[in-house]
Length: 117
Image (cartoon, rainbow, N blue to C red):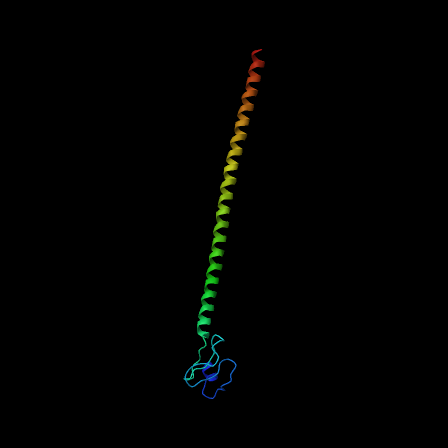
């Protein structure tokens, strides 16, 4: 633990921040890690762990949201494809039926003309 590093037996020439009896650090330019007179440390490692955990949680949430969106979009695309295929089938059947009716009518006219003549 960091307190062991900052105990009163620490050297005053530590590279991570020297020990002073007044509670200050002899190395304030390193942004932390110095030892205070009461044996505690000015290190903010707990804050770093909390921020890292929060960042990891955000990444997990973003990944889950992206997966859900991809699944929903794929399902919607499948539904649209089924509907389009059904509509195309109906349209093709209607066109074929109409062509058959027109062709049958033409054949009937030809037969009627031939019978009459």
